[in-house]
Length: 334
Ligand code: NDP
Image 1 (spheres, rainbow, N blue to C red):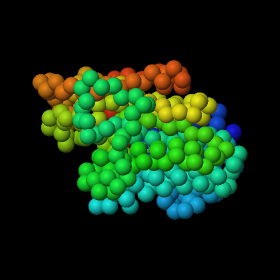
Image 2: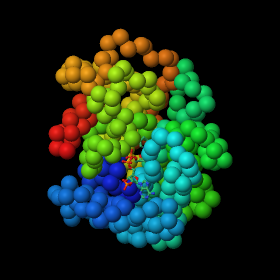
Image 3: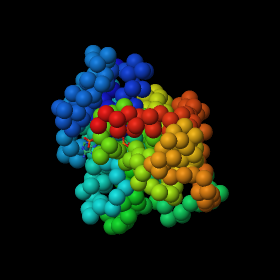
Image 4: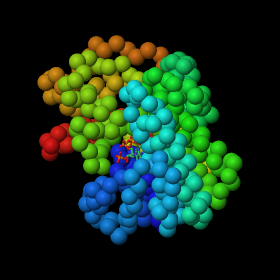
């Protein structure tokens, strides 16, 4: 069976691609340029006959995925901007690509390939968290939670992280509403990961890292002198996120919170200090000794993903070792 993977050049998508190929699927990758298609083809030379490519320059364009959806039986939609910096125009840079991108894929399916039965949408913990409640000590987030932000608030909000979270909430909600209102032939399942970390399988450059990888790179490149305050207290290994997307192709239509649990940057630095002591000794990694204990914060419940998708989660230790090695290797080759 062929599966369409949108945004295939991305950090998370590369691991979705691995998991889909491992599960025996053939994958049609949508990317923004021929160059990106060639890079993926080169990295996946041993799977040449299981890959196809389609160029989609901008998911916001009406009908952007009309060609992409042809010839597949399912879709994994990952393409969406992930940046947390403040924007001068939330609509243009975040809300339109997230929401119109998602609804656009669904419209293309209805118009051009009604034989598609399942669409897996990469949503986020961002679609669940209520930022107005702060760290919510004593509270446990689960799939029952929805970020309460509205479209009008999202257009106006000045904080980049809040605008990104809004884009994910509104895009996921739009997918559920589409199914409810239009009753198409397909059903959806949504994957909601918090901060995603792990080794890089896509073509990356140190000066243009994806947001969550850059979040760790700053902990090993000398730019943090002390351990920064944690912003989102939940994480998951990118390899597990890939596996979850593949599993969700054949699971009940539902939301799935894909998380290994809570974490702090202090724990990350402790792991780096244990396995890469030279980074702390040379001042590239902030010394975690004496970092203040984290404030009380929310917990996360991954029981549905374990029960229904059969997920088991990698440890922060193995994630960090593989990610730091990946970054050091990239640094050595640039
Ligand atoms: P990346 O930036 O690596 O991937 C984003 C992908 O989306 C890229 O392939 C990018 O293409 C594509 N894309 C973005 N905007 C457009 C557009 N307008 N038209 C066409 N393609 C577009 O980030 P991630 O891999 O981290 O993110 C992938 C998904 O995972 C997103 O939906 C994100 O919200 C979600 N997610 C990520 C988390 C994380 O911690 N990394 C946490 C939770 C959810 P190009 O590279 O060519 O610009």
